[in-house]
Amino acid sequence: MLRRLVRSHFALLAAVALAGVALSTVAVDAEKEIPLTKFSQDVGGYGATMTFLYCYSCGYRKAFDDYYNIIREKYPEITIRGGNYDPSGFNMLLSKVLLVTKLLLIVALVSNYDIGRYIGNPFAGWWRWCFNNKLYASMMIFFLGNTLEAQLISSGAFEITLNDVPVWSKLETGRFPAPQEMFQIIDNHLQFANKIEPNPDFVK
Image (spheres, one colour):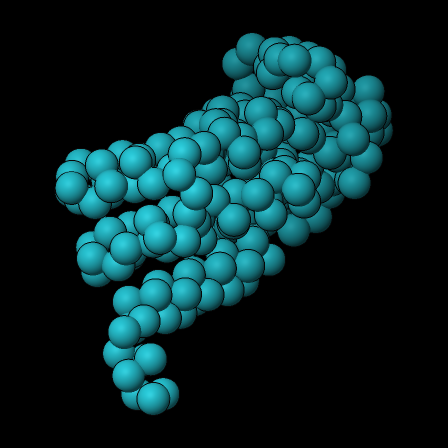
């Protein structure tokens, strides 16, 4: 009895197991920081510490690299850190639900498991179409799911702190700071005239 039940629902059990592994992997990854690179690791070891938290999925990594270079050029003694800005907890949870749903649907399609009998009439016709066009439907579910997940975790953030004090927020201003604005913020915040001398060879 149990063996027959397992055989008849093997595809569904495999899909649930795969979704569970994916969900646990996402949960672990969410707790990890972005791996350190030459642009996100600590530099210097003394003086002030500037931290950039940016939306990685928005493509703001390049903006962080640009600010890293210009700040390091003028203020070589500043320690610069960078990392991903995590969106709100609800958005992260919803993105995980979408990930699991996407995987379940794709596994059900490729394993010929008919879930049409478990869903209502409004979706039964859609599932029959997916069942008859498995390759196209799997690609559609995959890319549509990825698009929705990216929208949920795209915060548009580019938040800057100096010695743990917020000095700029793109979420509040709606824009990136100009380089001269950034230099002015650093000078005003730390009173660099008495604490850290700018690089005399820096060309404005």
